[in-house]
Image (tube, rainbow, N blue to C red):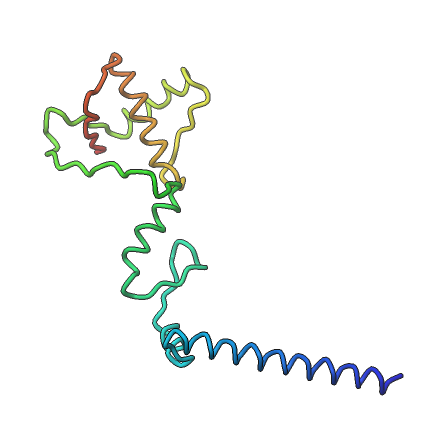
Amino acid sequence: MLNSAINEREIQCQNLDDFTKKIHQEIVEITSSLNWTIESIKADNDNMLVCPYDSSHQISKKMLYRHLECCQWKQEGYNEFDIPLPESNLPLNSYSSIKLDSKMQNSILQREKEKHPTLKIANYECPTWHKLYISFFMFFATYLNNIKFLIFPYFIYV
């Protein structure tokens, strides 16, 4: 009984060894068909960095900046079809700028929350606070005597 169990284990071990050799050979063939070597792949892995937004992402140093931009965008709840709001190039004292301090912003948000109980007020730790922030400005437009904006103005938070 013990001998048959040992023989069975040896057969399983041999099968596993044959399988790993076969897979290794397939990997070598695939990499050589791509004009790569196993050593070059290992060297490339040493140059890879881990994404701070998603630890399952490994990025090369030359693609890091572009990847971080896209990954942060997705982390904040956006997708590739969303368009970022343009940065304001207007001076702070521009007539088309609306200045909000945090006290005024909070009072407007609280009033709108009373009118619209389903409104969720974001904090800046929330990954999708940008979308909620835009919703705030839509409510703010209503708050300003239902002004219809032909061109959405730049808002500057101070």
